[in-house]
Each structure stands twice: as structure tokens, then as C-alpha cells.
Figure: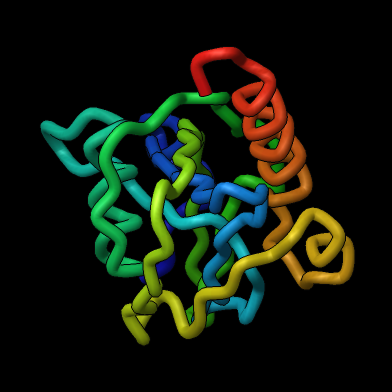
Length: 155
């Protein structure tokens, strides 16, 4: 049965993580349902905070056990925040995005189910990458977050 693109309760709450390395490359996963690159994330489960959901999703999808996250924005409310699945179903969502900078080099492990491949993208690489539609808003906001974080004295 197809999921309505807008449920009677509104869009699904989701959480995601933009993972950076120290030099400013962004880790993205190539998603199985659309073969496009995106940050890691998914639905918030009952009883979870958005931060706990974001940590769970990046651990499940990329095998990364992250620590501290910093929220940098909430996105939604337009058609680009609707996922179309291969079975014809769709789901609208509002996503709370967090950022994380890796202190050490870690090799991501895609789950092979939702995420087929993980790759680090420099800001220049991102221009040619085939990104999920919602990344048109999320990636620039993530890059701004990373730049502002690096500019702070405590970073």
C-alpha cells in the first residue's frame, strides 16, 4: 500500500547528519532507492530525540559511531522533501540536521541495503555530484555550518 505524500498528522519527523573531515570534505552515501548521493538520516522513532535518531541513522547506514553533534537547521515544507520509493509509495518529511567533524580518519561501512556506497566529497566535487533533491538546500547549509565552525576560536 502506498504511503500518502502528506499524512493527516503532517510530515514525518526526520533527522540527519552532515559528517565532515578536518579538511572540509563532506561524507555522503549513495542511496539504493534513487542512486543519488545524500547525507545520512531517516525517521525519528517513537521516544527518540532528533539527536539520538541522527546518531542511530549514521551508525546504521555508514557504520560510524559519532559523539557530539551540533544542530544547524530544520528543513521541509516543499516538494523536495518528499521521498519517492521504487514501489510507488512516497513520504513527506521535515528533517532536523546536525553537523559533526571527524577528529580522526575512520572508514565508513555502508549498510548495503539503504546505502550502497560512501564517499568523501570536497566542496568542488559536490558541484558535479548527482545529489538527492533535498541536498540543494541541505548541503549549502552544511557547508556554511562547517565554515562558521572553523572560524570560531573554540573549534
